[in-house]
Image (tube, rainbow, N blue to C red; front, top):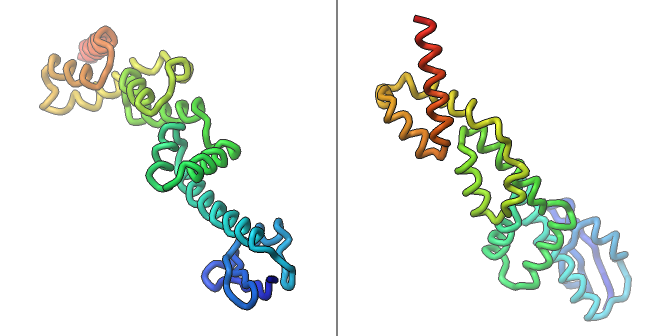
Length: 204
C-alpha cells in the first residue's frame, strides 16, 4: 500500500485528505502531515495507517477541548466533568486531560484567583466565593491564599449605596437581612451601616 494523493480540504484549508491506493483513508492537519513525514508515493503498512488515524482523531479531539478551555479558566474538576460528558472512553479522557495539563490549562491557583476577581466584581461575599470554589474542587489552602481580607467592607458599602435608594430596603433590618443572605459578616454589615448613618447625619 502507498499514499497516492494528498488533497487540501475545500472547507478547511488547514487539513489534508490522505488517499491510499486511490481511496480516501483519513484526514490530518498540515502540521501533522509534516511531522509524520507523509508524502505521495510513500509506502505504508496497515499498522501505520491505524496509527495515523488514531493521531488524526486525537488531534481533532484536542482541538475541541482546547477551544472550550480557552473560553475562561477552569478548575480540574470542571475539566474532568466536561470531558466525561463529551468523551466516551477513559483513554480519550486521560489523553485529553494530559494534553490540557501539558499546555497549562490546569492550574488550580490561577483558576481560583480568576474566580475571586470575577465574583468580587459581581459583589459576592467571601463566604459565598469560598463555597463556590469548594464546590469546584479547590482545596482550602488555595482558597485562603487567593481571598483578600480587605474587600468585604468596601463591597458592603457599595451594596448599601446601591440598595438604600430602593423602598424595598428602606428598613435597616431588611437591608441587613439582605446583606446577611449574601454571606456577609454581621459585624461588618453593622459597621458599614453605622458609618453610612453617621455620614448622612453629618451631611444634614
